Length: 294
Ligand code: IPM
Ligand code: MG
Image 1 (cartoon, rainbow, N blue to C red):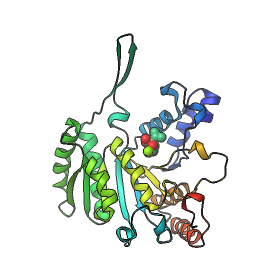
Image 2: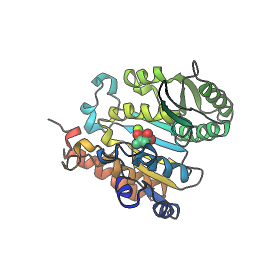
Image 3: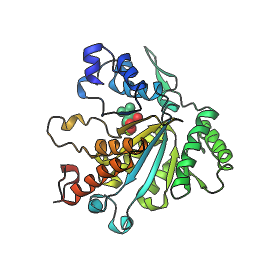
Image 4: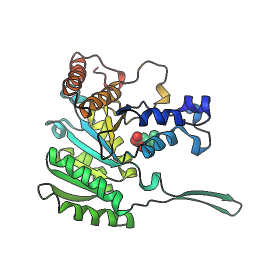
């Protein structure tokens, strides 16, 4: 991210990319910072993040939301809503849609406009839906596909393909939900969800919302996948420049991303050891300020 811009003039040097390509898995830290907020947009650290996902072809981003029992009262929802915990997974499409579509900014006298294109092809929708169905099959067998098919053409296609793919997964129940309704349902009744599948931008927005159900955005890990066993693991949060250098950042999202990495490499005992360590630490009330028990 930023330090690469300072040293090499780009947020993601080829050398870094090649090291990642030669690895079995990648653990990635948060990128960005105030210092690089005003560099040209194609050089921002965030572009490096989008590029690494695209270059590594990581089209499926899996973001589990978990509320640890010891953090129940850190969840902003009423106790009766989260009495039975929260356990849902968002599968976000990661290499298509509006974040990668054609963009333009025109700034001429009397002619000022910008646009970003939300474009999805059938194969992109099909492969993310298949990943999500596979994921749902291993969990509660309920899949909610989130779109805005009452307004967007790209969402209408999304919904049509979702219904077609569903025929191959008769054991999984598919439901469609508009994204605005989903944003509401996540705080009204998060228990209704098992696996949510959605586009890049909707997934980005809904997972910030969903993450705080687990107490803090500093708790939420993620895994980005493609068809083989390669994966990139990262916290869903950014670099939080407002708290940089204060020694108060919550490391759990990154630590549990490492656990997800180990699990994906079939190092199950090692993954469980990390997860148990997180659990124990929380129970012993060692906490960062975002989840502090006062
Ligand atoms: C995330 C982040 C990134 C994204 C940003 C930093 C580009 O918000 O991983 O959710 O939008 O994907
Ligand atoms: Mg985000």
